[in-house]
Each structure stands twice: as structure tokens, then as C-alpha cells.
Length: 452
Image 1 (cartoon, rainbow, N blue to C red):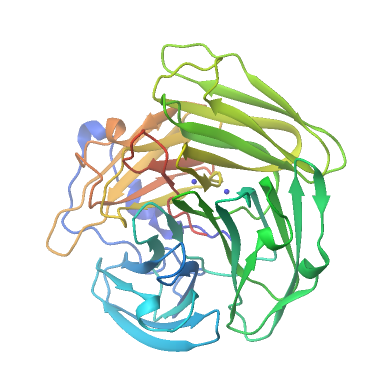
Image 2 (image 1 turned 30 degrees about the vertical axis):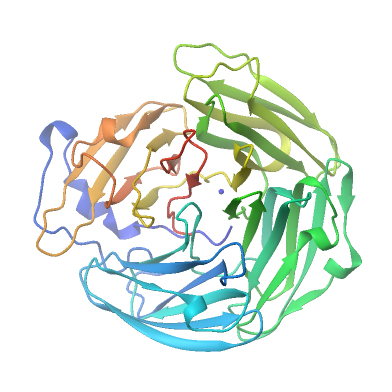
């Protein structure tokens, strides 16, 4: 749960959690408060920023809102600027009480087809999430722009739309190149070279304008000047998803909850940007079954896929735990859905801290912690609650290479519906994964907030 500059979500929470006992000695202190410098770029920051892009207007595919959550015990004031793809702008402000949330609806404030939101906060500890209107697509807001961005699995075939929503959070113009990789090889279309986006402005790039009627498009955005906030927006049939991407290639990726439901589809989509073939192995863990590793070779400068379901070698048995390894660095996405369309999600990069919040209001079908290392990891849990309520804390041991449901490890809450939960570890080998309740199971994966 791997698209931006990463910062510790709870760097200063260690002292608070040091006294937390194991689950057998669960404590419930009154109204536990996160440090004011948590979720910020620096300890004691006087102000922080958040950038969100990818939402559309009523005529687009990603109509929705941005929700801001104050995780601290102090009131926060948020000054918000909304900009559209037609260069229209509007400003508004929110005042959030401790542990409270508030939302902004861009299309009600600014004319345009697509929108970006920039928020300035008088302190640290505020997070943001953009949520599509149907609550089946979410994307965390970021704290800073990036200079490299990779995202796999886009589809520009008939009935689909693949776009890059790019916002420039800086005071000078940003210049960037967009390169694409398909099953047929590398492409660097001339219109995608030397593209520019003005200061505090938004551009939308339709991949299908240059990569026509193509499935499984991998994208590398290289920023030549400045930095950008970027989200991929994929519409496949009736399904819209946000592809958050990653900021670097890797030889490993974890997908701890992948559906194998009978009527579902699930693929690991892989892009190889290198000059050597990528020999990919996908290990599939499925309760009560032994599944032989799935292998695939991805040619240089191209994309490919490993099918998880439907696959005659993989039984229909709920959720599978999937780990990908490659001899060369690649980037990946998980495509899940049905015949009505699929959604894309990027892998979560192992880290030390994550925040799970029920921004959709639908709760979660699955919420897991995964230890990507070979050694046992101690995982800490702390709930964030409204003033006057009691917070619960606890910890549990997570064996090397294992994945467990959070509610099986932490008895401080019975459900994550409506809850906000902080999950931390002492080493950067933790992955947190959440899925929304869908039919069939596991077709909508929600990326947790992880300090990006």
C-alpha cells in the first residue's frame, strides 16, 4: 500500500507507542492524540501542503470530492485553491476541529471538465483523500511533487479511456516527457515530448490520442524541469479507477489481497523499461491449496501480464496473497474487475507507518498487514477518535513473510467501518492493504495513506 516523495507518517509517535502493551493487555487511554508533527514533512512544521488531482466534473468519469482529516489534537485551518483544466480558479477554506474531517466539492466551485486541489494547512497532521462519487475509487493527496513516475496497465481500447491528470504545485512552469510501453514495444510520441504545465496549473493527457486501441500500456513520466503531482485515471467499461503509480522501478512487488472469485478477473500487469528480458515469478498463496509459481518473460521495453483469475492452475478460493519477483527492475499494477470493466491499483511500497480511514463510508471487506521481511515484526495499532471518545491501542507479532487480517490481530475495534486506524512498525518492511466490499469480492482495492 508503491507516486511521490515519501515521509514518515508517524516519526514522532514512537514514544507514545513505546508504552503500548500486547493485545492481551489492551489499553484504552482517553482521547489519545497524535503528535502535531505527524504526517508532515518536518517535525514542528508551521505549515504543510496537500495536492490532489484526478477528479472530473459531471461530464467526466471521476466526479467526486476531496476529504481532509485532521489527525491531531489541535484545530487546523485549511486554505484551498481549486483549479480546472480550463484555467478557472476558486478558493475556499475549512476549519477542522481535532480529529474532525471536512470535504470540498471541486465541480461545484469551479467551471471545467477536470480539477486539481491545492491545500495549505497551518500546521501538520492533516491528510487528504479524493473519493469518486460512487465511492469505488480513491486516491491519497500528496505532500510534494515528483520528478519520476511509473504506472502500468492502462487501456485505450474501444470503451475505455486512459488519462494522466497532472498538476504543477510549484511557482514556475514544469516540463516533462511521457514514454509508453505496450506488448508491441516502446513508443515516445512526439506530442508527448517536452510537454509543459504552467505554475499552479492542471493538464490532462489522453493516452489514447497517441497510443490507439491498445491494452496494457505502461507509462513513464520524466520531469525535466520542476516537479508535478500526478494520478492516472482509467475508465474501463463502467468502472473508473485511480492509478497512483510509483516513483521507481523494483524487482519485488506485493499484492496481499487478490481475488480469485469465480466471476472476477485479476491480472498482474508488468512493464519492463530495460534492455534485458524480465524473468518474472509470481508466488500465489491460497489457503488450503498449493499453487505452483506462475512465470512470465517480459521482453525489453514492453509490457505483459500474469493472469491470476480465471486461471485453471489457481483454484477459486477467495483471496490470494501474491508476491512478484523479477531478475530486473520493473513496475506493475493489479487489474481487477469483471466483464463490466476493470480497476487498476498500484503496489504498496513497504514502509513503517500507514493510516487507514473509511473515507468512502462503506467500510472494508478486507484489511491486512504484511511483513515483507524474513524476520518477525512488531506491529502497533492505535485508533483515532473524536473528542470525548476513548482511543484503543495494541500490538501484535507478525511472522516473516506472513499476511494477517488486522481485525484478527487487533481487538481494539470490531469493525473498520467509520474508523480511523494508525498502523506502525519499527522497520520499513510493513505493507497494509484494504479492499472495499464488492460483488464479486476483492475487485476494488483502496490504497492506504502511507506518508506519500
